[in-house]
Image 1 (cartoon, rainbow, N blue to C red):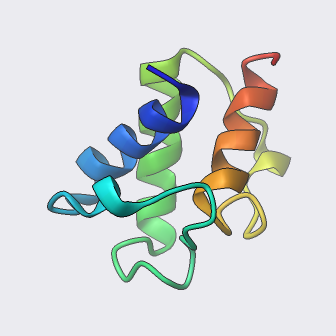
Image 2: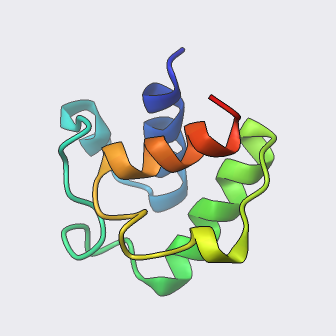
Image 3: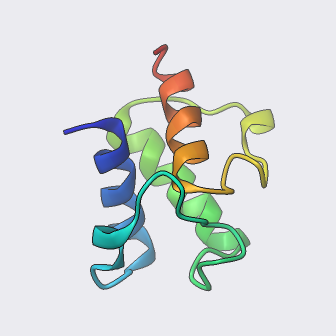
Length: 83
């Protein structure tokens, strides 16, 4: 499973998107485009990513830019994975 697939799986489960992640790709907008992704949901997504991917985010990682698109979130995860 690719990092993008794993991130999408976390988004699907955490935000309860009803299968909408099947049509998402790296260019899919997140923050501001998904009504489910509010400030509280960002915290839940970060927590789920940390637990499931065994990574640790820094406080400075959590920015609007990081959550702009699926691709920017995947890039952040890969940075934290040391890729």
